[in-house]
Length: 151
Image 1 (cartoon, rainbow, N blue to C red):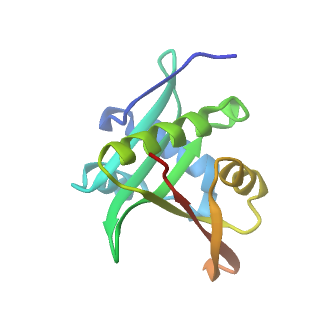
Image 2: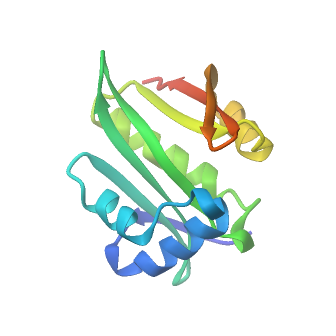
Image 3: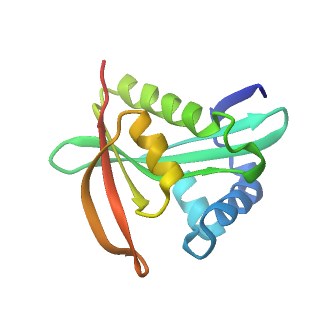
């Protein structure tokens, strides 16, 4: 088992984030400039997972206010060689802890309906499907998930 360190995402690793993002999402990946924009926006919480000096993955969450304040997971990406090593779980658990620290009680996300590994992870961590998003990912439908963060 590798030792994973979760820390605030640093723009100096933008090339690694972009490489991981494109590895995970291919044509649906955010561009490098979109990632820079997201990482520098005022209402963003972004974390990176590192193994030694290697970026293993990252998560970007936007704090949104609709009818209530909630965390919206914009992207969660894990490098191929670090999958199945609890990287995504640790990123999600830390982001949820930070949201709760801010008094935010809900986290939401979208996922491709055919991304069974991610869906399984989200369900295992307590996320519940609350809707279907028709043709959200080109011709593929998305699923909308939500988790109430327990204090």
